[in-house]
Image (cartoon, rainbow over the protein chains, first blue to last red):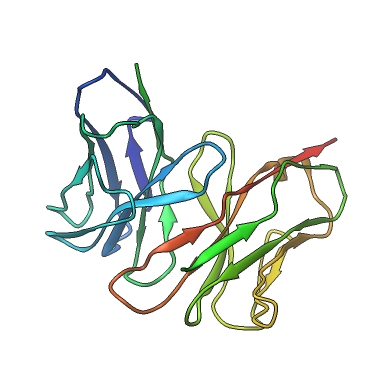
Amino acid sequence: DGGITQSPKYLFRKEGQNVTLSCEQNLNHDAMYWYRQDPGQGLRLIYYSQIVNDFQKGDIAEGYSVSREKKESFPLTVTSAQKNPTAFYLCASSIQQDTQYFGPGTRLTVL
Amino acid sequence: GDSVTQMEGPVTLSEEAFLTINCTYTATGYPSLFWYVQYPGEGLQLLLKATKADDKGSNKGFEATYRKETTSFHLEKGSVQVSDSAVYFCALRVYGGATNKLIFGTGTLLAVQP
């Protein structure tokens, strides 16, 4: 089955730790995205990548980093510089400017 | 800047009632418009989309018409079911530039009671 997978489903982080969220897709999509969702708010774009080895900051990139070494993978690292990381993180992919499809999400909680 | 405004929820309906969730937008250029649905604890699923004025998107009994004159993309369903209970997001994408960025509304929670 083609689709987008995210792992883990739940993630707990201690203050001052970096954590990495995984996103993998087998849809052969060129573009991938990371969004953050907070309660009662819409999704906000963190980073996006349109091709391998290239990525761009979105609206709320501070405290986050990404890499795009393979077409299928777009991991997101939440660094200790992110002051309020507790949120639901969603990964998406698309064929360039076409419709975005989303993964099931990772819920990150800071202890 | 570009933005999306949705009616605030929660919207509570009885099964088989008619549903309308309002969505209006502000955009430069000619956006594509989307409705996504999010079931509890899950990611977003594309429900329907429209890419130009007067287009009607439809899926699973839901419909929305792209109204350029009123800058609206209201979601409707003639008879809701308990299984339709979810959060619904309206979103727009403006063509041009280097990004395929989606701009989302804040979401509307729909609760359908048996």
